[in-house]
Length: 396
Image (cartoon, rainbow, N blue to C red):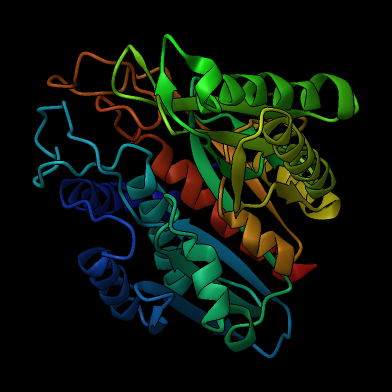
């Protein structure tokens, strides 16, 4: 590996920051302590700091020379409402809250890069360090944008990264085009007329109607969507009734839709509405569909993805970079930033969990798992990547 020596020398300092953040997790839009730690660290290193974007977000600005080019580097800060099972020294000190997705590591890697660039950086232009709140379901990226992120701190491109369990530690994965899916939720409420289960002809059965709707909307994936357009429609809930001998007045079903393109998402929502309304009408029931679009698909710009892959190869070697990594149907609100600016989102392998110290939980070291822990061996890798990415981008 071609890691930056000064970053390797400060590894213990950055690891200490990471473990402090892990031990004090904060949920979306509650990252007050984390934001303070980030802002205080940036100020200590002489970086211009702006607090409170998107409620609890922090932006650091570092300028050198007279160059007009600027780059945005983003890390997320929030934790999850999970009770940690690990018992090692830096486990969560807050019941029901845990850094189970590695945002503590993402924040620490970007802090490591900021420290190095402030103390040793040789570049001409501006680096904007974006520490974002509320990635976990709170659309913190969108909140920061609406709060003036890119109008106040314009960038020519923006980059993000996420640790990836199962991928060998220190390996990178990136691809041009979609790398993560859109995330959307739906709920279908069916209202009929209840009756005794022995006399169903006296009512209008919302349960039977819900089952027909469930079957019908699955046909969108197999009969309306092009086979080469990836999408998932999952019904995850069906609720109705309280007694075995009573047909209830109401039933509802809900689930999620994930796609790699907005066009496919538009098709699915349009077809859902037609099928839901027509099926309910066929069985004399009333129906209401709520379809909520959470996060758009995360789509990497071609030029920025190729550039990022080149920098990754400089850091870890070309053999450890998968430049056409398989996209995932998971979602990420960095997608909102990529709607505003060209850029690239990538994965950094977190390994198989063997890095965890004695006292880790019984479960696997997977994302959103109560036994998860970020691999501290990645800190120097991620920080070196951020530094070289910024220096190379600003030198173009």
